[in-house]
Length: 247
Image 1 (cartoon, rainbow, N blue to C red):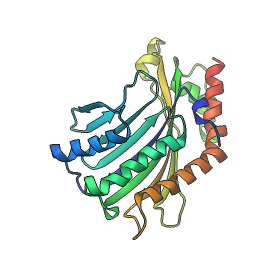
Image 2 (image 1 turned 135 degrees about the horizontal axis):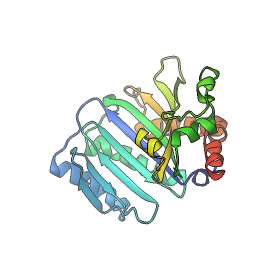
Image 3 (image 1 turned 120 degrees about the vertical axis):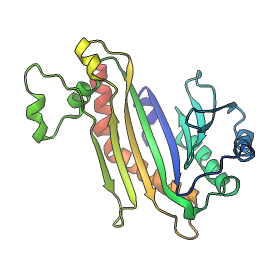
């Protein structure tokens, strides 16, 4: 298994549970849920409400690695930035999945989709889109455009989604997200922003009878690590890192 922390400047491993029905939002329910999480992770002591109405509990970010959990109107998210291991992140995600049926009244029948997300951030001061095009290349249909003299690539964010079963309920998606805009390119002034790579395994729909959220997360993690090892690490992450280091 790859040491994911060495592949980019920042690595995160997240879980997202999307629900069909709206989640409870009463003061007693939200605080009770987060207080229970805090018993297991006492360093998660920063609680706040976003302007959107989402509720967030997180650790201090200054240390460079931190846990966070959020409750939105129809989604529960659990994340760990720069975890010491995947197991540490999965332990946190499973705690959330174990608690939500009892404390947030979420049933496996109510599952719209469950996500297992690996994300990688690369810091780069320059034209992100041009770098991604250089590192990952373009399909033969686009190569001619990129080779035009004196051109400036201003948008290049490759993505692909694939179905891993006949029902198309189990899917994987690879997305590269850049943060360069036309203003940066026109002025030739680039902030020190991050190029992000997201690799997501998603299970759509209600879970089969007798199958738990935790078991489904284990299945998604297995697929995620397998595909990361077979394709994403050597064909996406390492080329990006090498292109940045060569600049």
